[in-house]
Image 1 (cartoon, rainbow, N blue to C red):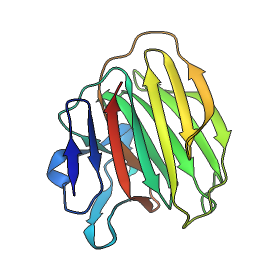
Image 2: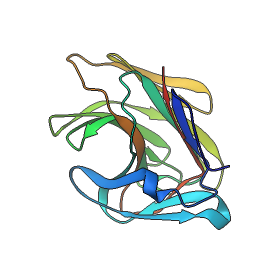
Image 3: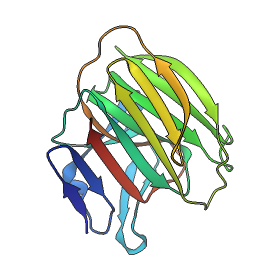
Image 4: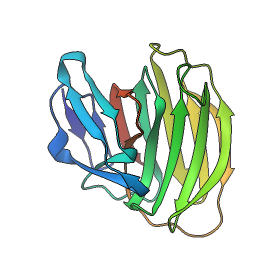
Length: 183
């Protein structure tokens, strides 16, 4: 299996090099990173860059989620509703080996400005597989860790539909599976 698509979702398990299905870019003010499709270990590796993003092409959802399975997040992120580099929702994750140890920060990047919606504490030992989901429905945002909602936020103002993907900073981040789904 590699990328599985339906009218409402995509799932990439990184068993093959699916780089042609993505666009490498960066969030507002950042620089693109290095993305390695490590098919031998069934994962995508993200490193280098500054607020680097890898966005799945061909999707545009207003309501839905981005979900990842990961065993290492050193400031990596989940991205949803990405119409362009200056407008998106992102949650940045720090595992036990990151400077923001065992914490997730959720941002609404709106018109290039970073708006912190909130933070949540997690128990994330590096090397342990976890599932993280960022759900956005209209103006409501929910954050799930291993199937449990750990935070919810609301925003005012309208946002555009967009795609989803993952992000990486200067440290190494692992993505074993990516799902982007329309709700």
